[in-house]
Image (cartoon, rainbow, N blue to C red; front, side):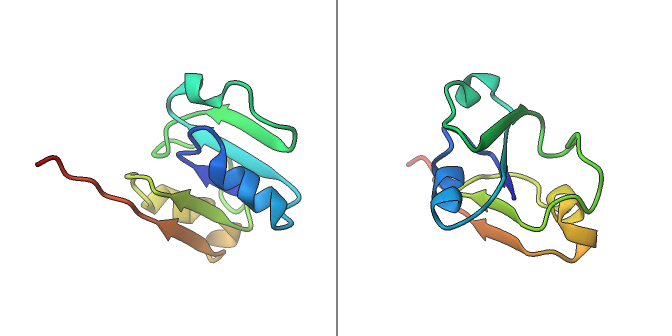
Length: 93
């Protein structure tokens, strides 16, 4: 599973607890990826320029992130794998 905008790994840890065998956690901010728990594989990268070949993940998760999802969808299994998005958009008042 690919966790885009992983931050501190909350969604990735939940995926592991739910039975995911492998979680690759990607975040643009390398500092967010420090100290990850076992089972989470941190990668500092831009969601728009992922360092993975197309079709190498069975699931792409983007939980509460504002990112471009076009490239993420291409990274799912053969371009047709599931893409799970939980978007949280906050606006300043």
